Length: 175
Image (cartoon, rainbow, N blue to C red; front, side, top):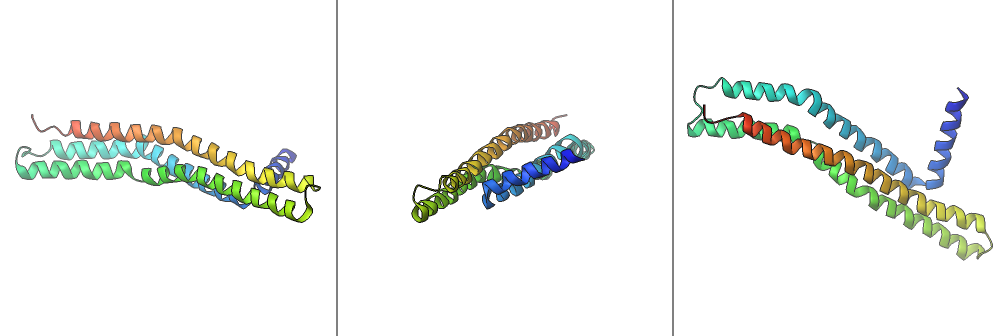
């Protein structure tokens, strides 16, 4: 059980070193990854059931060539597309936000460095080092968070495009 306290202590020290911006990045990172896991769950479990239901409803129709049937087909494809694309825009926005938050951490850290320099001059090296770490750690965390999200988002967006095309192809007009 001591290992848990060691890990907890290391994480809290790291978060304190990075400042408030690092906490914001961490909270948003947890939120982004919960959205990514929700989308992965949707594609792996829920979407397959919905896809079968949509295809079954379309195949049970006797009229598939009329103007009205084409509008129903478009509505089915559109509803499926809305479910597929849900939260992808929010994930993309969070990915774009992480480097900006890292830059905000850089600015706040450099402000601390300049405060120390204006008060103590160049003699307080420890405070200057704290400010530099406050400047660099959120930058690194923002970039790592963005990169981790980019890989997940690229998989999700490719999967979304494939699934939309598949539903479009499964709802055939010619029998």
